[in-house]
Amino acid sequence: MKSFSNTYIFVFSSIMVVVVAAILSIAAMTLQPFQKKNVEINKKENILASINIESTAENAVELYDKYIVESYVVGHTGEVKEGVDAFEVDMKKEMAKPLEERNLPVFISLNDNEERQYILPVYGKGLWGPVWGYVSLQSNLSTIYGTNFSHEGETPGLGAEIATEDFQNQFIGKEIFNEKGEFVSVRVKKGGTAKPDSKYEVDGISGGTITSKGVDEMLNDCLKSYIPYFENIKNQ
Image (cartoon, rainbow, N blue to C red; front, side, top):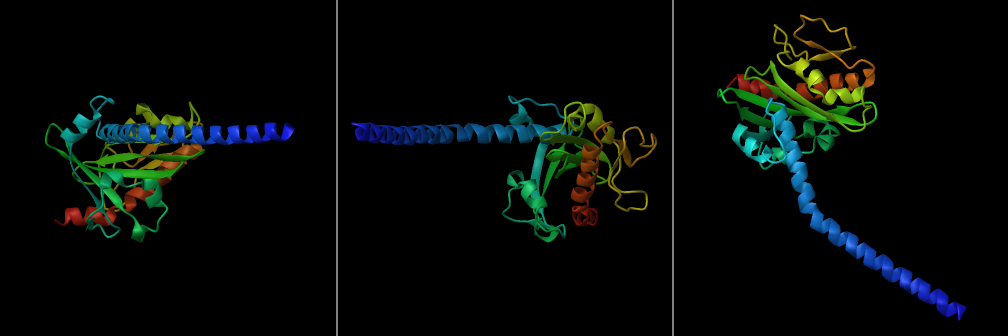
């Protein structure tokens, strides 16, 4: 009788494992399109935020289609790559590659005044996890038009402040090339030490030194990858 009981329990448990696994699999397959759509909408909201366009989950797709007029991928020499969808590029994977192998997305927007902006994704490391975002440049390819930064696991009130408008708005109007045409990026200085009249510095987060340094390195590493592309555009 005991043997039968053990066999019954084993069979019953096995059936339940299979049933639960099947239910979870079906649920994952059913929810996958919705999850993918949500990721797409969030990404479009972030891209729009980098050109100072506020959007919601309800109107992000419509506004994206209105303001983003072109997108493509370039390589390390600045040439456009065919057959690669800029929107689908995962910057985490790209930044893990040697520069020569990276796909570098470019998004082009036109604002209501028909002024062109170049939107570039950036990706780096914070204190507790990755930081990422988008930087938009004016048509001169030096002046920052807007930014949007996000993070994974940075400390609320400290490193997480990179996702706030107060931090991001500091970058508007800053330059990534100096007056000699040399790439200098925008340096994120220790909180309170950025020179008020500097075109190339912003204040980091007080108490969030490591995250601020991560943003500084992210901007420098990612934006300089586009220098050959900038030169190609300027020479057209």
